[in-house]
Image (cartoon, rainbow, N blue to C red; front, side, top):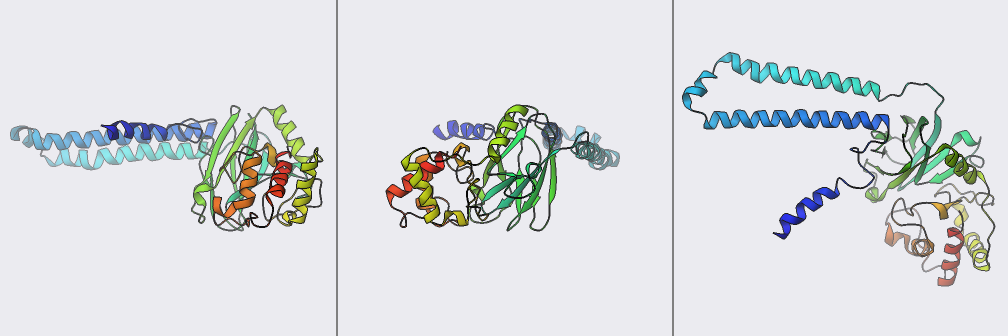
Length: 328
C-alpha cells in the first residue's frame, strides 16, 4: 500500500521545479514543447491502435477475423498508414527545426559560456575589449527579458553540453570550436540548467542558473559586475582579504579591482550575490563558503580546487568566508 502511494508522488516530482521543457518561457521552447506533445500524442494513438488490433486478433470471432485477412488490409494497415504517419511527423518536425532559428531582426546580445570541469564561466564580451574590462561571472547566465541573446558556447577541457530546457534545446560545447545558440526569454524569473554530456566524475553536479531580468534591472546588474569590488568594511573582512592573498587564491581566481586576476577558477568578484556555490550545490553564505574552502574535495571530489581545511585555521577560514560573502 505504501509503495503504491509513493510511486505517483515520485512521478509527480519529475514534473515540478524550474527545469522542464514542458513549461516554455520562450518561442523556441514553446515550439519544442509543441513537437513533444505532438509526438507523444501520435505515439499514444499508434500504441492504442496496435493494442486494439491485437485484441481484435485474439478475441474477435473467427468469421469476423477472416473478413479482415485480405492482403489489401495488410498493405494499408502495415505499410500505407505508417508511411503516411511518419511522413507527416517528419514534415512537421523539419518545419519546427527551421522555426527554432530566430530571424535576425536585431543585433543580439552576445554572451560567452565556457564549460569547464565542473563549472561554467560566463563572459559578456560586448562590455569590454579584454578579460579585465568585460563583465565575467560563473554558474549564472543573466538575460534581459524580451531581447535576443546569442550564446557562444565552447569548452576549456572536455565535451560538455548546455541545456536550458525552459528556453531552448541542448547544444554541445566542444574544445577548439564555438557553437552558437540563439534564444529569447519572454518573462522574468529564474531557471535552472544542466550539463547533459558526461564530462567526468562530477558531471551530475554541474548545474547553472539563468536569471531573466527586466532590461533596466539587467543593465544595473551588468554595471555592478564591471565595477571594482567594495573595500572591506570590518576588521574581519580585511583579515579575510589578507588571507586570500597569503593563501595564493589569486593565482586561480580573479577579483575585480585588485591585483588578483587568475583564470583557472571562477571569477569571485561578486560571489556574495550569486544564487549558488559549487555550480548549483549550495546557497552562498558564510557557512557554506567556509565549508567549501575547507573541504572542497569532500563536497565535490575531482574538482580542481584543493582543500584548505588543514592549511588555514578556523578563524582565518571564517574571516575569508566573511570577506567573500561581502563581495556583492
